[in-house]
Length: 383
Image (cartoon, rainbow, N blue to C red; front, top):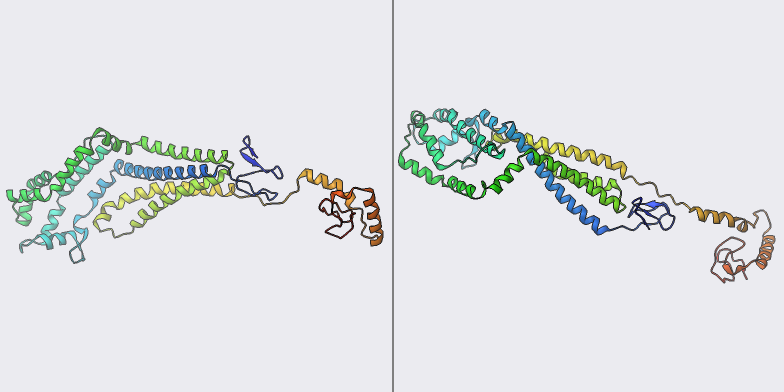
């Protein structure tokens, strides 16, 4: 029996209210209500919640990076000469030494000359200008910017005097054309971006992803998923604590993976190119995922007392207890201090005056089969 007013099942054995799939106080196992529907709903909610968690962590992290110019400040502070890379032999060397060993074949040029070129502001200024352009585009404050082969050629042309003074290099037209051919992949990306990334639909998606409205929408969506999950469990006679526990576990798993991975990367070698550029960025992902992880842990702790089941104490129904009390004087006709023969005689007399067809033994009160001649408990003759 299901009581829709209380959203609890009523035990058919004792009438107590109980949750679906649990054991009643009287020991009766409650059937599960709409198990397939509840399971499908839980799977759908879990998938939507995982997508929402990943999206909100990415959006919060990228917004923090862009709004606080974290990547730009990192480029400003990084020492290009001290960055470490692996050469062809697998040996880790600094960037200036790597350039010198692989691209310089002139005894008049030293590692110091390479350092001077790398430390000149024109390289960082070029990178920062492009980064700021990407940030403005993502935040819907400007048009998409590109790095093309012509940009690189023009950058070298504008700083040809520095290159000549430090390395004795002259950038001739054949060199420019060769460089354009080598960097043709940049031009291909520009064509691809013009066709697929900067249209009204794709650019709208990018702007929406980075917007504050997206953060609010994802937060509301996560709350709606929780409410819907709880309502489905309540309507199907499940404990609300179970829905809260599952919701918190889905929160914890993806957020913990992001938190643990980004936090562990913070301890990698700082001088590597990738880690030097992304070291400050990782903190944004660590903090964003840490917030979601903390919320999940709090909800899990709240769900623990909500899922504690009461001890299964077998209770006799009230109506059964009353019937037992009424029948007790009949079964108590045998005195423990009276001789057995007298009890038997009294029971025989009682048998003669009562209907033994119901199978009740007047001596021990055992319920026998209707029409039994002898009690199966004490052996008293019933007929």
